[in-house]
Amino acid sequence: MFALGAITASFVGAFVARLNTGQSFLAGRSRCDACGAPLAPRALVPVISYFVVRGRARCCGACLSISSPLTELLLGGLFVLAYVNIGFTSALPFMLGSLALLLALVLYDLAHRILPPALLAVFVVVSAVTGLSLSPSLDVFYSNAFVAFLIAASLALIHYFSRGRAMGLADTPLSFGLALLVGQAALPGFVFSFWIGALVGIVLLFRRPVGSRMGGEVPFAPFLAAGFLLAYFTQWNPFIFVAASL
Image 1 (spheres, rainbow, N blue to C red):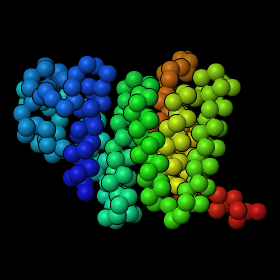
Image 2 (image 1 turned 90 degrees about the vertical axis):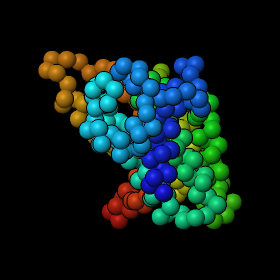
Image 3 (image 1 turned 60 degrees about the vertical axis):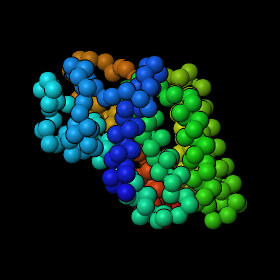
């Protein structure tokens, strides 16, 4: 499962790099980002190739980005967690597909500060099928879908009242798909997303140069993905502490 996730992440990385560039992601050889030389098959082995060449391209000696092996390790780990949680059931392929699509959305958002509508629509559909497959009954799925709608609507309102400065509109369907994907972990995941975003914001605030002003766009899709998946795979629920204090 880990190898499958790492290989899938490698393909997702190439897909995102070529998306909306006119290049085919099904044909054509991968090339070095620095010198454009075609890469040999031994340079394309997920995770292993990076460490074998010690982070430098064989063709020109340029430093390679650590992002590729990190995403391969990440998706490999998520595939393993999905198998541990679900097992070899009919829902597993849909869950793995949802995770791969989510990785593509996060990588594209980090690179371009936008979420591709077509890819986003596919993610929502696959996540809905995953959520339905994992739900013990239709009533539970409908309840989860209602919570997903409320979460998405709240982000849409934030976008509307802030005139797009606080939240991108594309985060609305992304949160809807994530809520459908994780089911009853949606509300904790929603809370974790904002906590993670706040923590990263504080770090960026303290790392800014002295005398500079805060500015620039920070993509929220990675925070949403991290928060919802954290809640789903750990089953941590911050509302338990609230209930215990009442």
